[in-house]
Amino acid sequence: MSLERDRTVVVVVDVQGAFRKAIEGFDRLVGSIATLVQAAAVLEVPVIVSEQYPEKLGSTVPEIADHLDGVVPIEKLALSVVGADGFDLAGRDQVLLCGIEAHICVYQSAVELLGRGAEVQLVVDAVGSRSSLNRETAIARLGSLGVAPTTVEMSMFELLGRAGTPEFKAVQKLVI
Image (cartoon, rainbow, N blue to C red):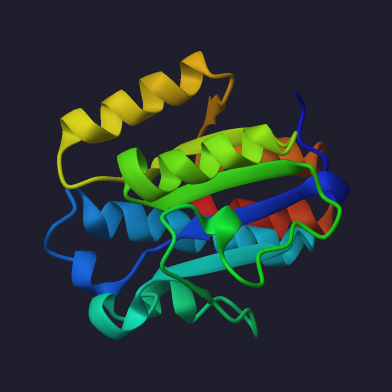
């Protein structure tokens, strides 16, 4: 499954302040997601952001929120973002999925998205858990269900499809 801009949506799950000290590699994870969100804006790929119980866990971290350009996070209590009020893929059927925690909310979101017929790619350098065991187990289990692994750079350049355009130059600046 090759990503197509007019079919793809980026889904960012629960990257909130309360996780800052609990998630292994949090700063790297947030940097990766911020890059992906910025590239999505350049490529005109929509972004959906969720927040799990924000009254308790806080809002989306500023390193990502600062790049959302009007995207309003969906508040949720369900573990999967798919069950949250306001979640809508708007007719798109390819999902770049990232966020926290890989083995809980990201995993359950991926399973529900697959159940709805979506093609799901897990952005492995943009998912995290409190332990590497949980993160790696989620990645392996999702792979066995048909979720394709990808990375921020791999997905960005796959969506670009070609070099020599103003979009290519703008995205390239995000990673070089």
